[in-house]
Image (cartoon, rainbow, N blue to C red; front, side, top):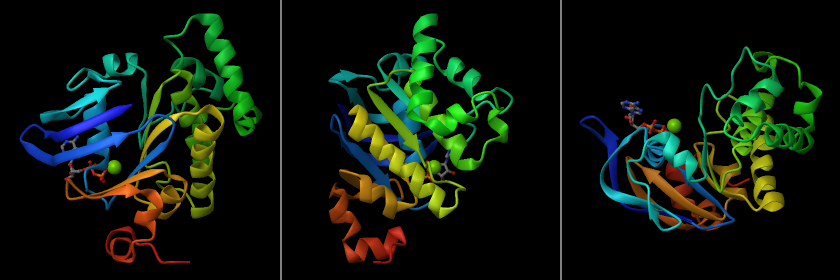
Length: 237
Ligand SMILES: Nc1ncnc2c1ncn2[C@@H]1O[C@H](COP(=O)(O)OP(=O)(O)O)[C@@H](O)[C@H]1O
Ligand SMILES: [Mg+2]
């Protein structure tokens, strides 16, 4: 569904990604793991058009989208859930969902919002609460639901586990598996908390210092003792 070829990217004169090749197949979860500062967010930002592609190309369903502005990338059917600031703290859960669906016709927005509340019962419970009063995990569910409001073909998820207690992070990541299993959603997930992400992932890439060091099956990366120990902080348990 998404093909990234020979991508060099960064910000201004800062070169962050060096010749990245990534393939995101339809209907699966592709995981990009790597240490802090490796360039994971930059990869997603380059797809969305907020970081600069210096060289190489990004193809979505065979169509070049390299360097398009974010609203045009979104219009192709790509939804981005950022790592931080992904909900409006002063708006209620329902208002957040409505905001996220602003480009849909009015009645469709309502239908889609109520579908999201069915899918995430915890959000229905707090539907009139301000998003800023939700727990970290609940807020992350809301951010995912907001991404889904746009009826995307592809979702880009940035570090869903950031700042969450491990048990909550696990829950959120399990929800991502549900998006694939129940909705057939195609997902590109970047994560520092590698173990959980690789457990639900299909294809995996290891990104270190702006270069891909591993490409293959998620389980193969998880069980590669050397890479796991060096980069992922994974202890076999
Ligand atoms: N908006 C930005 N402007 C300039 N440099 C940035 C920006 N965002 C990230 N960087 C730099 O790009 C490099 C990779 O960062 P990032 O993509 O956020 O890594 P990761 O998400 O893997 O932790 C870092 O050196 C970081 O300082
Ligand atoms: Mg990041």
